Amino acid sequence: MVQVNDSYLKLKAGYLFPEIARRVKAFSEAHPEAPVIRLGIGDVTEPLPAACREAMKQAIEAMGTREGFHGYGPEQGYAWLREAIARHDFQSRGCEVSAEEIFVSDGSKCDSSNILDILGAGNRIAVTDPVYPVYVDSNVMAGRTGEADAGGRYGGLTYLPITAANGFVAPLPEQPVDLIYLCFPNNPTGAVATQEQLKQWVDYALAHDALILFDAAYEAFITDPELPHSIYEIEGARRCAIEFRSFSKNAGFTGTRCAFTVVPRGLTGRSAAGEPVELWGLWNRRQSTKFNGVSYIVQRGAEAVYSPKGQEQVRALVGFYMENAAIIRRELAAAGLQVYGGEQAPYVWIKTPDGLDSWGFFDHLLGKAHVVGTPGSGFGAAGEGYFRLSAFNSRANVDEAMRRIREL
Ligand code: MLT
Image (cartoon, rainbow, N blue to C red; front, top):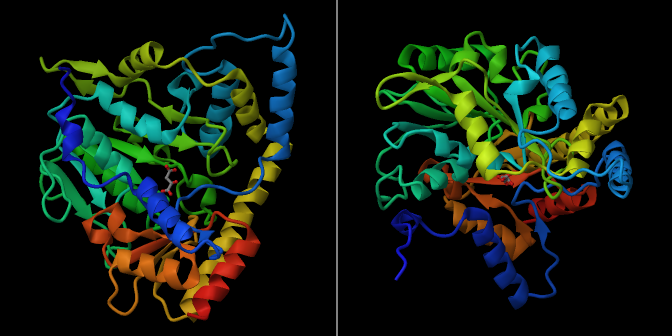
């Protein structure tokens, strides 16, 4: 009989969002009359920007002609998209990132998991707590952790608690680590790191030969001009960091699928024999072997994000969700709840009231207000007693959800 990957058996519960969906489905079946509003998973709701739709329509038309047809594209993405990304997202902010260092993909969730393919099993790994669950679960699946304890923390991982006391920005680890996952603007807490805070991490990584996996999927939601959007705005980061970016949240591509990963040339790890090895070459090899690229049509849509019209439309989209976040913050604070985040990020992080635990508050909100959020404990043990609301929804739904919560 075929043997399974036993590491999967170490995973606790289901993946957070399907688990929430399962509970909401059960609730809706029991209460078909209840009009449920979903502010749980961070999935966008507003239509794709017109510039992207137009570019995709043209690409579809081109695909219907012999001259404009595209078969397999480059696994790393088309040069025109990689160049647009390098220019607009990095060079315009003074970051030294070139087109060949951009690897276009179908998602940051996939890339931040797949990156483990090119990293050794012996790395000591640090994650924040709470954390985007994919970083932890992908390590569990890859056999890079021990068993989970009663609190759901896996052996072998270094957990860095992020709390209101440290502004939800992780403290440097007390024991040495080789691989560090950072996410700013942060999912789930909505916190953001300053230049100085990121510099501490870059300095740490350079001093300890560590690698930072920097998830910047929500960078478009930063409004404060003083805050860094990319880790490469920090001196030395090219020598210690890989960055993940996405079109999902800024341009509404959660269903369309397009993202990219930056692997700087000259960024190295070490072989078992102690020789330096360039990570760019390994990732390039991994992608060429296991990935066939994002469709031509979708990449044309992503390219349109960088057109003048696309930029204007994406700014409007992000601005719309950030107004939702401001409404959520304001209304929850008025209802007497302690709120964090939601100012440079589309997530509002709430302290659960009246001693309710995270799932208790989930059930309370769902049962009484028919509003779905995400229990903080689903993001890690230190998320217990917190709750996340997403700003991704229509204005009517956000207003209605807040009205119901206010009246609770
Ligand atoms: C979330 O709700 O945390 C997001 O949907 C995560 C993701 O983009 O995968």
